[in-house]
Image 1 (cartoon, rainbow, N blue to C red):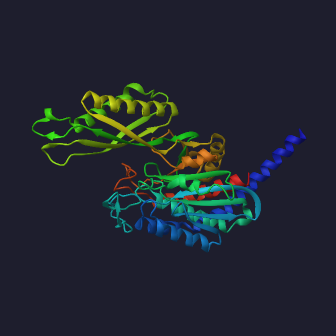
Image 2: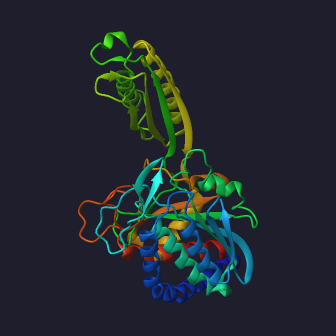
Image 3: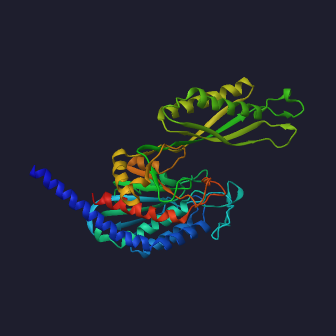
Length: 426
């Protein structure tokens, strides 16, 4: 009985010390809010595409170096990694933010609106932080500044990872989390656990949503090459129409989801996002190309869908006198929140945000290359509310109208800071 009482007293003492420590750090966090918002506006106004985040990386590195951290640049082309060593020995925890923008032309009327343009896949396009990576950068910069003032309260090391190309590297290039790992970001020192967040335009400011196990989908990119026989548009019987074949293949793909996939187990999606074929209104072309994505949350369903799409494309094309082949590229695996680490993270997040503000969620079919870190070490990924005031219809991510409320970011700084400290001081 005495042993149990002793252990209880130790636990209570540790909890009280942690609570006091949090109060001290919260004061610095509250004082940094304006800085975090200013950083976010700068990055929003000056976005850069995947693997081209040179100015972004330079600004991040300058900030981290000014804090006295050990900073490494050029990781995975434009990535920045910094170490904050506590005054006491301990484990190593990583915090990750993605830094790339998207080839999207902004339609908002913000004072810090992006007017940047660049070439993407040979086409001139606007560039925009249309997924909120600008907020992720600013939040993690804020965490770095706050915790660098409290090394005496850190038992171990915090590794700050600013990762490029989360949206995917340009064709023919490596990039993103895969290349970060290849370049050794989880080693020297070896990382024990990793945390990341994503701003969410459809959930209220002040809320956090997450779940254990699979939280985001595995993502495959596919390219279907359809070959037919060209002919005059007035005489289709003299050729084999690859556009017609493509339409039949697209229709067939959807039956794999609606009639073959066990959707009670997990959701799945097949989307064709681009079709390229033809040159004139009166010419039936020789070929067509379709590009799309598959999203799955169950490995067996993933394997079945890939196999059936490959078979179906070939068989449908053959039935109409043509041929079709599919090339596959895996973009992410399932973003898998370690159950034990997630349970502890929920306790931490409730202490920061409030018990009623940390909400359970269903898995979503979006993808995240944070998942590759979680393949190697335990990790937790969660969503941070950022819905703009009075908004009855959220602005979707990856669109020209995407918008985030700056008021949501301070909770991100608090959350990542406390998650790191609680893990190291456990």
